[in-house]
Image 1 (cartoon, rainbow, N blue to C red):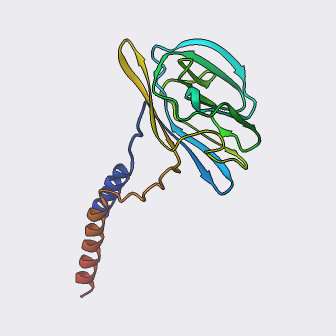
Image 2 (spheres, rainbow, N blue to C red):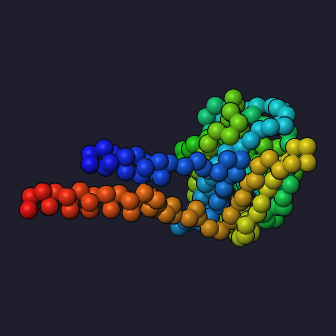
Image 3 (cartoon, helix red, strand yellow):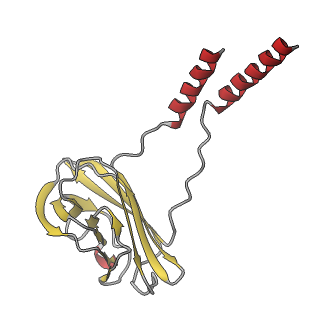
Length: 202
């Protein structure tokens, strides 16, 4: 019986595990109180990327809606890569920026007008990335960003290699609490243990 319960527990552990979405970045630009928040998470496939230049990270966030550009620069160096980027501007605003200690995580940028992706220097393809920054005392209207969902894609040899989805006006959805697929099996197994124990005691 003990071995059976251990086997069920292993099944539950396997049900909990799972891989994230590779080659996809989800980005969010939204208002919170009197501030504008930027958050992103995902990973990038750098197949076909051509290294251009690198710059030192300065703890800054730059947003340029009319050029389809968001750049978050943290510590270390930010390396730019030339790659075809398709999409549309996410507003009419000119550059807005901030440099403060709210800029955390990994450096990352996408630039529609310049066909450029920026990544931490030494980035390994498809490694998870995440970062965030706060622009205090700003509004989306004030920086010229239009509410909506915008999709940017990188292509190499005619194939889409990455998809960046920028949601302007909404915060990231709260992560649902996962229910392990093996939970019913575990409950049944524990019930069986209790039943057998009661039979033995009777």
